[in-house]
Image 1 (tube, rainbow, N blue to C red):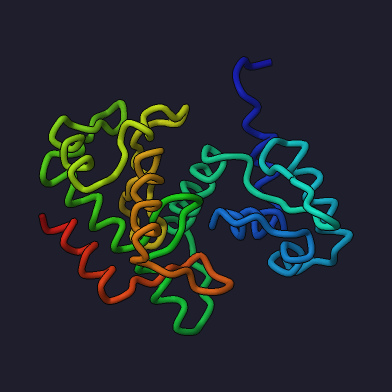
Image 2 (tube, one colour):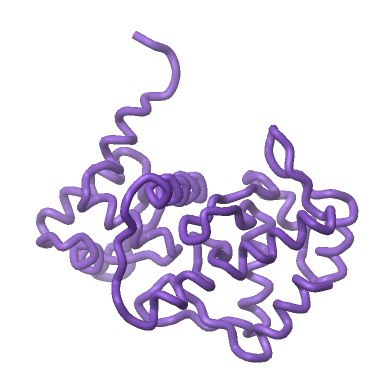
Length: 226
């Protein structure tokens, strides 16, 4: 028997179409009920409950009870990062499912990836940080340069709090809709908290998409251009 993590077990959990749809629905960071996830997966409630039990046993989702309801969420940012990476590979190697309607453009431009910003605007922000030398790409991962540390502090984004997290401070996350990187890790989460706290974006109902307000867009683009 080969040593190391049992990849096939996780792959089997993610590989079932119904479970994959449930996990995709949870990438937005919100906790959902079994009924809501059954609707996302296109299966009945008993079948959804069985799938969720397997995902919980496998460590991919966590469940919390509130009143009469049980809410399911991804077990953590590592699971979200894995799913987003799989989405990126799927986008590069096969057909992409589409849902017609105005939400498509919103999803491509800005959406929530668990707890950080994804989409074309997030990729533009990442590219800007790399271009100015605030983020340094290396074979071992992504590094925050001293100039980047100063820039985030001047912008009001709490880097020290992010550094105390057990998560990587900054990580490049493959954006499935653009097929390039956006900023993840605790610094990416801190950045998203920053724009939400200032009211620059609003979440679209029933979607991972977020839409910038006109003043919020102007302020965000100024961060990219500075």
